[in-house]
Image (cartoon, rainbow, N blue to C red):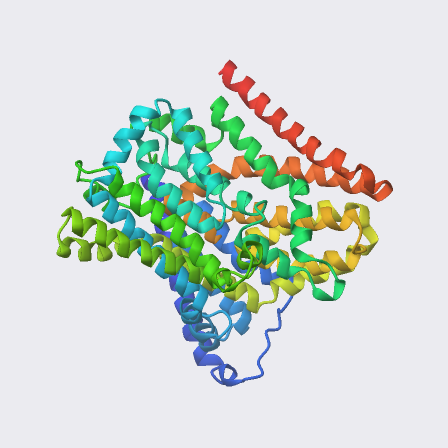
Length: 552
């Protein structure tokens, strides 16, 4: 173990030194090019545009250290963009208006997410210090008597909160974490349960931010009702439906495989983390309050959920005459979550002050504690946005679009499977599912007629692949939020979740392949083949794993 740690240490130091040398050499050799306002990278929209995320993800999985891996990926992207010019690379990393670090932080949507995460962290600290979390944990422990029951309760609550994936992960995690801890469910397993009921649920929920994003991704020139198209894709979203089916199999049959098995075995022996990393040590101090009322947790949580949903509806015009569907289709989720979380914090202040639960000074100190508790996910989010910006500056989207446009028309029967695989790769590399289907849906619309059922399944394949890649990617907002909600080490969550996600992805790819071939000859048979085949393959995988577990 010591040798491996030293190896990773020297690797990180060596990469940092190499970066500093390249900056110094670039400034000394070619300082003038950085001032060229019309500069365009020579590697734009080539395979090199995918190098930054590939480097970052590979290093994160190898070194088990995400901060340096993201930084190296960002540096690689900046130098590829700058053509080796150190000054331009440094300014691009920090200040470029479309992908720089400072720009990413000051972006309205990104800044809103950071405020939301900080306020939610504060609420969690407050509920812990008030004793509400401990009281709820004792009550739930008396009602939920098994590990399976604790996991099923987490899944059920995750499905209920379907309006936004990040909100889902953070809220359900803060409520269910004490319960799963009491039943010795590993933090990695909790993170998987949160992640698997976040984006996969949102992408099949008509009233959600995701429905709005898909609706707007359909080009208006094709005269297609975006929302109606989204609803039609739900039965064809093999990955989302397959993930929920796999989740039930894994939970009910205790099918822990891959790295997750080690985490769950260690959890039964009292180690919920397996690895030495404890990214949320602040929670130990905050959970010291053992006395309190259940309502000290229930009232803030219910207020949070209601206010966030109403906040999103408000930003979409719910209180200005818009219908529920239209309001959520036009909602600004980031703005709504900040508004809802702030109102929930104010209600919590009134509740705790009126009950004398804590002093005013203790309440105010919880803001700093909440910020500290969320520093890890916020740093990962900021670096991930920066990495995504570097990938965008190198034209990764244009590169993928070019590949798809040149081959889609000639391979129409294989388009659903190809779109699914490309979507998985693009979302995994960039960490954004919304950006992925925004790029690919217009290409799919150009391949099939507007009234074609093949168009529906191809768009569904795009959505499914985007969610799958987002589900697997260590630089995805949702994956980061799931780690934060579970208070799990981020790399532990990524490595333990991959085998589950890839199993369903493989089954989905086969389902889209068969559906595309059948649909090419008879569109009427589309609905009868793809989903049943995918579910059958997931079930076969689950039964095989159950049989292997019985023999072990």
